[in-house]
Length: 249
Image (cartoon, rainbow, N blue to C red; front, side, top):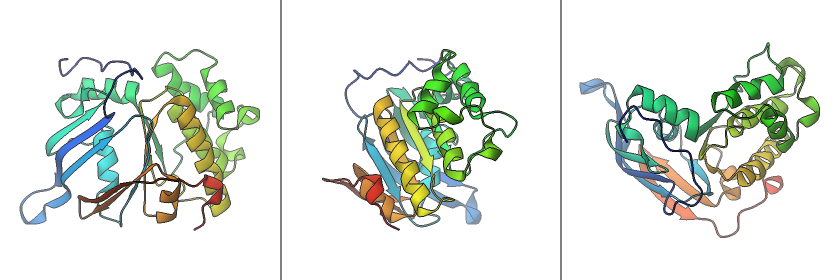
């Protein structure tokens, strides 16, 4: 595949890890002012895993998902997502990759205030050729079918975050990347959102990477990765993940 070709449409039959990071470095700036956000990160994540990435501020968590999502380029190393070498793509290829393969959810909902919940989700669905009913179906999946015609200002924080999740899932992404998605929510709302997220991602077949400083959330993960000073210092499977409703923080 050339650097400007679109990545292949995800196929659940492909074997092996859906994400591979091989000795990935990311440096911002140069010389005495250089900041080494990632220092030789290696990671291999299997399809369908719900992975929580933990670490203190400045550990490289957000940089990690930005590189996997094709938002930032790696300084060196290799990142392969669903057999697409992200580090080899140029700008057009990265745009196609982000559109076809990746869903993003952030701490702040970033909804368009002048569009209804359905319209916010449809806007992304149209980019990947989803049918006209896809937005409504996806909002049903996250428990907001009865609020599809409401504007963000009339939705609670948890409901707005669920719209943001639906917006990310409507294109059936191979990988769903979440940066502190419950950071602005209270405990009960956070648990509801995480439960919806976990269930919806499972039903859509997406692999989830959720980065957070909140270690309690890791108890619902299939796998927990710890970052410190830009390095993967721990990577473990969790034998018995908790249900989101059981989390406490």
